[in-house]
Image (tube, rainbow, N blue to C red; front, side, top):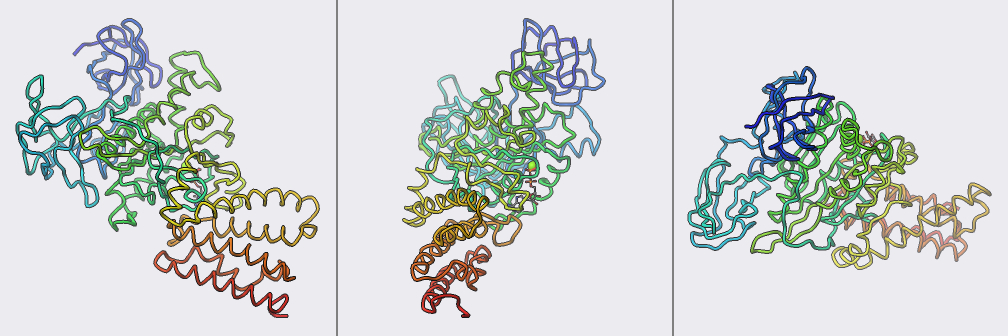
Length: 590
Ligand code: ADP
Ligand code: MG
């Protein structure tokens, strides 16, 4: 191991000389405390090192040891249900070794070396395999079958294949390659800053169904797609990310938390294990990997955590799974970049962020996608990436929001005014967008109801019309509007309150199937159609507004999925009551 010497220490940045054998992105150990760091810049024999631990008390002259290897993650059975820090150290081991104290230089294996897994081979001696081929499976949790793949770069004929209980570092397969026999174990490693290889990228076109009405109906994200959710403090970014982690129909979830508030990550760590997976009834953790940067961890670790999460996500994608990765919030990651850049005395760009911010953000979202995985089976996998952004003051003209919006295909615009008015999720329906809409329209029409996309378009134009009508109402009052326009306002109000608003903390309303979303929308739009018929017969909007069925419409969201046909009853009741109004020629109790 080559030894360099520290020249200077500036917070998380350490500059060392005598490092001529090291390379950018190599992991190093700083001082005899062995603090973990990564080289982020090399100038001749001088290395600038980003240190992932507290550097107080470390000074010039101390040793720096190079490991000659880039920052990598361990991939294999044991990832699911794990909780890691930004450089994949298991939180429980960190805690056991350090308690609540900050002890530095703790090296902990990401994957348990002792634990045995039941390896079931899926290949035979003599089979010709290529990189990415699945050689066997391990039932990692009740819900996740971990597929053991030949690591990138390994191809050849199976010489030996095992079956039974093995640890992640035992040899389970021997492959005869062009360059000799190669022992394959269940664990593989991959450098975090490099995307894992795949055969081909495909166009994302099936929706990642989230059970959140405003998202699925109006601003859907595709499996393998990208979305950003910028919003000011308290507008609901974390709640939306949690809802996605709980409900999105992804097979594996990777949740990267860069805690904004001190106890926010602690909440996640406490709350997630208790949550039940609605699809399996098992704990949500049975399909989840958590990466947590608690607030007492140095900023640099946040920078790495995003890549650790992406790499783990890609690994499960390679098995053929649909994976969703949430990052909350990427602004904390960008701030870590800014801090390091400042300490490196680089030329600052916009608001002090380095000029390469935009390309880093682009490279990060570029790792999302639906792909044909390596291997001879041509299985498909998808990694969807959803990033929260917390622009200071909620102003998205700042660099991180702007760089993000240039690279994602879905924008959920959180609005302070809406959250203040307790309209949740506070996603503004007038300026959010989804560039997957056209593809997903085709999907929902075929798989949910042939009228789904038409209804969605009609509802959206009503909401847009509402906003211009409201302008008139503000200026000259509601009574000057025609009855038809007043009806539009009523229907739009129902769309906002009875459809768009969705309570994440309500037992039933927290999740809404596509079928239920369709039916709810159908009732609200029927109000407009029937209402217009009634207006033609001389009925007034004021009389319709007070019909008893309106209360049932407002409580459709509370109808459980298994009683979804009750929504059809609401529609019948609406029809009956409006017809009755028409017959009476006005108010029901007149
Ligand atoms: P941010 O992460 O943007 O700072 P949070 O996600 O923590 O904001 O949300 C702040 C608060 O807003 C939550 O504690 C909750 O009370 C409320 N809230 C946000 N979204 C919803 C929702 N969908 N349903 C109900 N309440 C919500
Ligand atoms: Mg938050």
